[in-house]
Image (cartoon, rainbow, N blue to C red):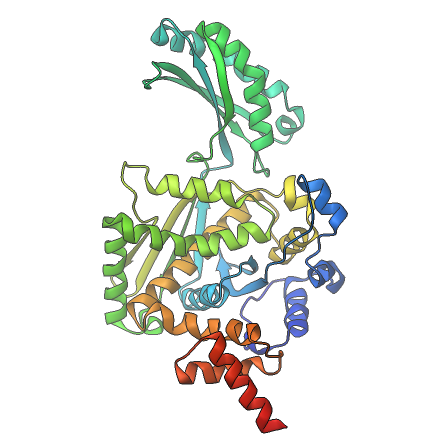
Length: 423
């Protein structure tokens, strides 16, 4: 069944109605989403996932609508505590739909394992000796994971370099591994451990660190979209977004906040699907500094028709196999809602949402200012914190915005006044 992520009035429905619409739109049974009732993670399950468990913590799980990636509609689960993120991504995706949505592609699921060899007398000669043993080392790496090899993955290449450090020159080898639909940490770390003694013997040194790199620049994913000028607010808004983008490209202080906006979207989907948010964030920020200075991850330009084009390229080491993606019931439900069947598809959706989130933030900054929309949504949180019931929250939030005082103390005053009127 084809998914239609364009759901009119989705935000105005009740939670139960939204869930029913998502289940229907994603083509999954309502029972498959039952884990969403309580956060899905029982204490005994949590106790098997990490150490010293004493409880669990819940986060809101929303669904971004309007998302179309490579011609296919996706309903995208997002886990975040920050107001406006899901709404902003949905709105930006709606604007992108006019010109075909998001187009995404990637370089393939290749991860890097690093093996550090120290105490080498002749580092340049050692490097050559390591590379001469390339075929032997690749075969040894593949022998550690025959299932991965059978699925079409496995060790693909071995590189080595001499790295000058304050502790003296070191020989650093990189093992490149196609991890297929896994994030890949366990696979590449196991291979690195196995080949480290052989590498060290060939180099005539001592193996030290052997672990994957989160600078996953052999696993890049790109997304692009055209955002309609009229829907953005006109030519002036397009020009101002381009100018704002140029600011972020040139200034690391602005770039840090610009990229945080991208990660608002990316991390929310990564977390919802049970993937490693820290690994993804580390890789993205390292990529932002790949040329020696920290800069914006995205680029916005005006095309010949006056519309805004946006592009984003980042490392995206996510998977559908193993880890919390398989262990956490909510992550399983999120993957079902998404309807992705490979890690590559998941990565393409995630990067597309990152671009949507970035566009929404840049548009808000260039047009009415970021606080305008953000504070309207934040007002709902303040109203709930002040004790408003679900029926009272919309009216209290409306009055807080009207008064220009989105503060908990004022929310209590407003709530008391409303209740007094009804008494």
